[in-house]
Structure formats: structure tokens, C-alpha cells
Picture 1 (cartoon, rainbow, N blue to C red):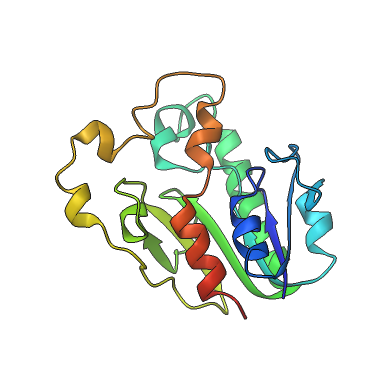
Picture 2: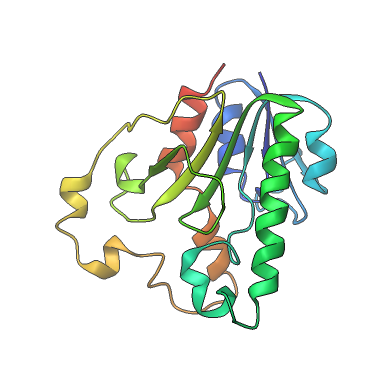
Length: 194
């Protein structure tokens, strides 16, 4: 199966599919963190048009996430950036559906005007952490949890449950927060394998 993982620089989802012998590529304006030859540093709109069996997209969430309301909310200085991000992301989803039969868009709880097909948590896939994430699905089944560790999660201190929220400031904090959890990437590769 030909798989495109758009707006991904980590390679985590791409490699989950490649490990299962799919022809998977990632693309982003940024170079790949893993220096993979299967990463295209390019505008994803152009790459999507090449035609794929499955497209999974992880558009930038800074302006879209509700956690940014203090900066991007209505009446705030960056609100216009949020409006542009919403328009771009909705256009990306619609664009992808014209070039692939199966499409998934992933983003944290946010302000997109289209309703998510489902929300997942890392603890549903083996990671005792919280990061409620929406999946907008076109011709794909919702992900089924693979390794529920909520019982472990429930007994952890808040700073471990919400590790990503409590990360100290650093130049790569945004990268760490935006990388897909391995358990979720593996679930996508197994359950959306065509």
C-alpha cells in the first residue's frame, strides 16, 4: 500500500508502516529528524497530488489547539493566524480526499469546525500519559485501543500523567510535544493496513 504521512518530520508513523512492508513516505517543510531517504522536504499539497492509497496528516497545531486560546482566541493579537490555520487545515483535509480513498487528519483538541471522528489518548495504546487527540477519518475505521494502561496512568502524579504539558522550556519542546506516540503510530499501521 502507498502511504503518505504529511506534516511529519519525526518519521515515527512513516516507519511504523515501513516496518510492515508498506511503501510509506513522509513529507514536511522541515527535514526528517531521522535523515530518512523516504522523507520528502516539500509542500504537502504538491506531494498529496501524486496519488496515494492512504494519507495521514499531522498539520501544525499551535494555532488550532484550545491550549493556545490565550494567544489565538477571538480578540487576541494572533487570532487572524488561527483563522488562517483553520482554513488551511480544512482545505488540506478536503484536498487529500480528492487524491486518496482513505484519509486521516490528526490534531489535539482544538477549534476545527468539522467534528472529529474520534478522540484517543496515549494510555489507550500503552503510554501512561494524557494527550487527548482528535482523528478526522475518511473511509477509515476508528482506532481500537491496543494496550490500555489507564490503571497505571490513574496512579501516577499529575506531572507524569501530563508529561508533555510540564516539559520545561527548550528549543525543541514543540518537537517533543508534536511527535506521535509509538503505540498510536503502530495501531495506525496495523489497523489501517488496507
